[in-house]
Each structure stands twice: as structure tokens, then as C-alpha cells.
Length: 559
RNA sequence: UGGGGUGUCGCCAAGUGGUAAGGCACAGGACUUUGACUCCUGCACUCCCAGGUUCGAAUCCUGGCACCCCAGCCA
Image 1: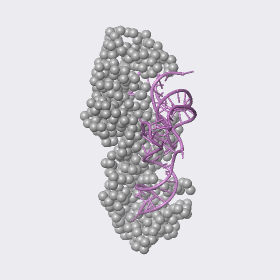
Image 2 (image 1 turned 90 degrees about the vertical axis):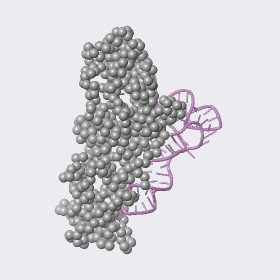
Image 3 (image 1 turned 30 degrees about the vertical axis):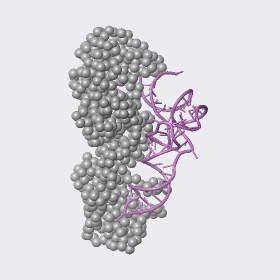
Image 4 (image 1 turned 90 degrees about the horizontal axis):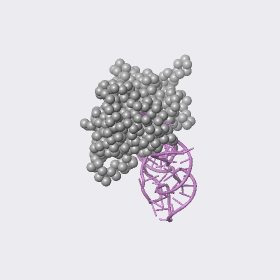
């Protein structure tokens, strides 16, 4: 039997093709050094997982290494809370950056020196236009920009101004450092992009050491070069920034010139992936937090019961390319089921209980039946399940007036109780409102274990829990957060009102009382579940990770 | 009527001139003490469109069309 240690087949993709080509040509001394560069301004989500799997996966496969580098150049949006959660999530995903943990903020001094270098070479200048003026001078997509009146300051003047910017002599926003490239460049990113801004904000790592902070475009390539990155892989929206990335590295005396490669970010149907929108969901209280099990964050998915192996498998199946795409949620669910099917021990649990009384079973008797913990893998062992006169079965496993193809319990019908006995429904007890409240059944003592000595067959097998031994639990059943495949515009309008359904009276087999947080279970015929951190010994709470595939539900729907 | 990208099955995605991989989904069937799993079978004479080159084109050329990204002192 295969296990989660299997390495899924890795599909070919254009990034690998580039790397293999480079290797064949002997570039970079045959080394592959990548980096995963999150900005610590939110929690990691499944889209980041795709990038992490790509970068760390490449490093693993080509005997290189992958650095974890925090791109923390904007203290206004970044917090230490995120730095911790990001590291926890990457480790949980199964990746190891070894000694290679870096912060762009650790490079601030070197970055500053590089900036002075640019100034001395006449390739950068201090501009004293306001933000609005800079925007006006930049031109538009179809019209060229015009040079700032400060564009021709001498290197000496610029150096003096820039040093005074650093020294804190100027107010926020009064000056910026800009690259001197070409104000009429067809690529707007090359129209003298801003390199440094003055911002009196305490940085989460450098405190108040700096009042000027470098911009992404200036920082990223230089950080890559200083770390000896060979392949700097980022998402498509940075494609138009590549000329600037290269310009900076060409103009400065850097140790190497990494190659920037862009790929399409992951989009998943029925959810949103932007950190801004996810933060809104958290801040508006739509979800309980970054780790709400409905969130596509790694923290949320972990709490939901999704395993790292499932996420890695999913990222592998999705592939890496350059076309914008919207991946079907069903693909993720498949990876989750595939992993859990192999690795989750089975349990019996009734989510919507209907009591049944086995009228010909002795009143005080309790016996134990043996149940396999995994139908295909004997190494999971077996457990003993208490069986008695009063049991709970799933309400939907009984129909008073069933359609032809329904092969579960109905008046006069015989079914098998999994690992137990054949039972036949004799009577239906209802309350005043006509609702079925209890079933009276008889059992065949000859069918212990689930098979009849006379060879007769039953069409259905249903799960059950002994009423007297059942452990009560709350079960949280999750569904997609949005009802639109591609939530856009006012995302609040497409929220799925049924994304969380809480069931309070669920009946679990006794062994679940000892479940621990790192375990995953399959509740037979129901789905995969795990304990929620809110759970305690007084009050069991379980999360449904994902349902089982249900071809009956599909057929019933068709009618 | 600026620049940069992308268009191959419902959704992903290989393919780089030699006659359309694979996965998900879906539809049949087998098996089954989970209507689960597993296993079979089916699912693009066609690759955004139109011309052209070639013995031969998804792959090359020309011209269209559609969609995405860029006008933060965000990343």
C-alpha cells in the first residue's frame, strides 16, 4: 500500500525547463538557490503554499537550497505576529530553510550604500515633488511623462540631500529618492521609479533606527543578489517590473545577477485569495479569525484537518504555468480525500441520531464486536465496539416510504449494522407531530459480525453507535465560504450563508473521547474529521474536513 | 491608436514541425460488511479565429480577436 511518504510524480513545467537548461549550460556553477519571500502582513494561504512548494521543491529536487526571506520594507503594514505564523506554517507544510532565514530589513545598511552608489553614478536623484505631483508628472499609459524640475540636481547635491533624509532632517513625504532612467519609457515602471521614501514609523525589527525605507523594486533584486539566489521566482504581476529588476542589478556592483521568472498565482474557485480580502473577512467578523476552518489560510486548513501532504499533492497536481487560471475546489478536495483515505483510521459516529430499540435483544446485555480500523490496511489493527439493545443510527439512513433504489432501513427491510448484526425494522414510533422519533427493530443473533450463515444478503450496511456508551459531541460542518465560483466586486454579497453548520447532538463511539488534536479520522459513510482546538474533555468538538464522495446523494438529487 | 503577458476537453495541464500525455470533474460497468476505496471503459479528427509556408503545423509566418497585468512615496 502506498503511503504519504510517496513522492507524487512531479509534472514538467516551464520553470523546471529553464533550470534544467541552465544546469546543462553550466550556469551558476550548477547551483540552484531559490527563495520564498513573504511580506509579513498577513497569514499564509494556499496560494503561498503553491509558491513555497515550487521554491522549496525546486531546491530539494536540484540539490540546492531555498531561503526564507521576509520582505519587510513597509513597517506600516507589517507585524511580528505574522513573522511567527509564517514560519510555523512553512514548517508545518514540511519545508526547512535550515540556517537560511533572512530579513530584507537586515540589509537596510547595505541597501543604503547601494543607493549612494547609484547617486554618485548619477543614476538616482532626490526628488522634492509631492506624491500627487509625481503622479501627474509620470504621464499615463499612452502619454509619456515629463521630467521633474529636480531631476538634474548634481550627485553632490543629491548625496547631501539623501544623507539628510536619512538623518531625519525632512518631513515625511517631502522628498524621495528616484532612479534616473527615462521619463518617456513605454513601461511606466521605468519612468524614474521611487527607490526610497521618508516614513517615521517604528519598524518591527529595526525600531526607530531608520526613517527612510527602501521600496520593493530596489530591495528585492539586491537582496536576491546578496544571498546568491540563482532563480528568483515570483508571480505574473511582477513581469512588468523585470526590466527594473535587471536595471538595478546591472548598474550596481553586485555579487551575481539572479534570473527573475514569473508564474501564474493560484486562484481557487469559491474562495478569495487576496490578503486584503482575507483580512477584511477577519476584521469584519465574517469568520472567527485567520485560522477559521473555512479560510483558505494554512492555519485555517490545518484547523480544518487538511494535512500538509494533501496540500503538497494538490500544488503538484495544479502545475506551474503562465496562464491565469481558476482551479476547481474539487481538485483540492480530491487531494485531501486521497491522503486521508490512506492515513485516517475509521470510526463510527452518528451526526443526526435516530434511536432504535432492538426488541429481541436482552435488556441489560452489552457485548463487544470487533471493528477494523482500516478496511484495506490491516496494520491499523482493530478495536472493540460496545453493542447493546438501544442504538443510534443516522436519521437519513431510514425512510418510511423509500424510493426503489434506496437500500437502507425502511419498514420491513433488513440491513446490516456495520461490524454488528442484521436488523429488520418492525415498527416506527412517531410523536404527535408525526415525526419519527424511534424505530423498533429485531436482530438475527446468527448474523453476528455482519454475515448470515444461510448466505442471505442485505443491500445496505449502515453505521451505528450504542446509545448507552455514546460520547456526545458538537460537530462543525463546513462548506465553501462563497457561493460564487469567482467572488468579485462586493464579495460580501456572495457569502455562502451555510458555510458553517453546527450539529450539537452527535453520538460518537467511545474511543473518540480520547482523540487528540493531531489525529484525523474517517467517520464511516460521513467523511473525514478532526478535533477542534476549542474542544475539551467536557465538551468534544469536531470539525468536518471534507465529506466522503457520495454517489447516492448525487443520484437522489437527480431523482 | 503605450508596454508586458496569456489563449490546447467543463476545470487544471503536457506538447517546442511528424500526425493531441496526464490529473480533476463527468458518464457507464465490476467489486464491496463504508452507496467509500479500488478496478475497468468512455470522454478534443482537434489545439482562439482567418490566411500562408510545408509531404506534413497546436507547434513556423502574416493578420485579426479575446482575456490578464502596469499610471502606490504597497508588495
